[in-house]
Image (tube, rainbow, N blue to C red; front, side, top):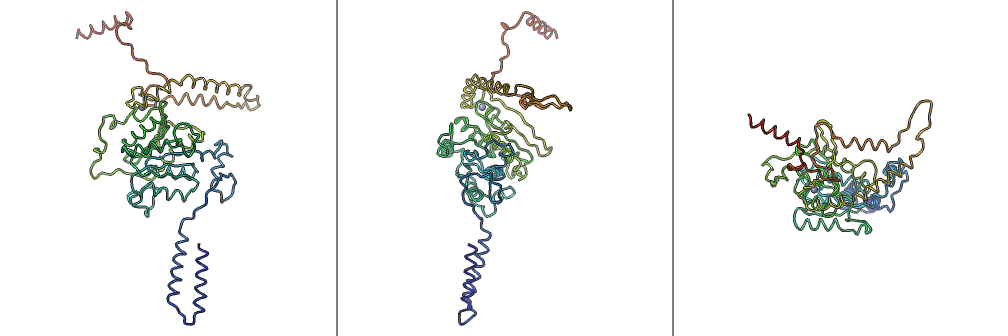
Amino acid sequence: MEVELKEMLDELESLKGSLPDPPNASIDKLQLHIKRLTDLAKSAPVRRSKLKDMSAEVVDSNPYSRLMALQRMGIVENYERIREYSVAIVGIGGVGSVAAEMLTRCGIGRLLLYDYDKVELANMNRLFFRPEQVGMTKTDAAVQTLQDINPDVVLESYTLNITTVQGFETFMSSLRNKTFRLEKEGSGVDLVLSCVDNYEARMVVNQACNELNQTWMESGVSEDAVSGHIQLLIPGETACFACAPPLVVASGVDERTLKREGVCAASLPTTMGVVAGLLVQNTLKFLLKFGHVSPYLGYNSLKDYFPTMEMRPNPQCSNGACLERQKEYLLAKPARDAAKAKMEAETLSAAEGPLHADNEWNISVVDNSEIDVKAAASSDTLPVGLTRELPSADEYPKLPATGPADMSVDDLEELKKQLEALNAD
Ligand SMILES: [Zn+2]
């Protein structure tokens, strides 16, 4: 375009010269217009064309060379598989929009974006949205930016409120839709990321994912903007959002009534960027099967403290779909144990024989699987000050023995003595 405009300018210049009566004001005006258009053309976004394959070729023009290098470095077995995956992001705010951009740059196959809100100037302290997008819906503005960054990603924009009846139905049917990958088992998406800012919407995402048996990740940033968390929720296997509900949800208070007049929540692009980064990092590990996916990871920015913990499902959860998923998970335990035993046996037979020959420096090589076992055992112990409130998913808690029938004679005697001592006071 710039070349054509330059040619037009040159032609006008020669036309001006050939005219009998220079200077010609209308030609000057035209030249000015063309100069302005040239400036505009220079600032317009340059869109690259779609790429059929992810190439590992190391050239400056390849948008995927650095990502494909993860494969060469031995971190990821098959990076290109990322193109098969669909991720749904609910809430395109300070965390969701940044997560969407990261996944787009990583070359995710398909992104489904949900939000009902519009871009405001008050959002400009965060990353992603630009002032000229004020007034656009967040989903449409996101699609506009993301398709320029990476046209290979299939983007779906859903401008709706999932907490309404109609919104929930559309949300559910969009998650079920398998046209992107017909042979996929389960729902039509591989992961749902919740990036919303209220409990009501989280409970709705929780309900949808429990019903669909859909793994999801929850994220949040505190109202004072200095801490956040991410959490992995696998229906039946880990605690769902209703298994250990925050006090406001458990007590049934409408959280909207808690918003104090004139007081607005703080937000920092840094905290939101960190939480979005942790969320997408764990998304990549989950999808591409590398490293360890954190079941819960907190972030306290004031102390740079990152607590982790595991949360088992609550057998008394108030969510019916969660209880059904828990039942299914327990029923599948024998098959799961058998598969685990088989895998361990294979690992053992592969590791047979000495891991290292004797050497003069007394250096010994430790089998990776031994480290994993130790790490798994230590991850079960909680940091000081934390207690586990929920039982393990695989075993229901043993109810405390009740009634005198279960008590031994000694116990009864002891109890009698205590009662007598109490009465004597
Ligand atoms: Zn639950």
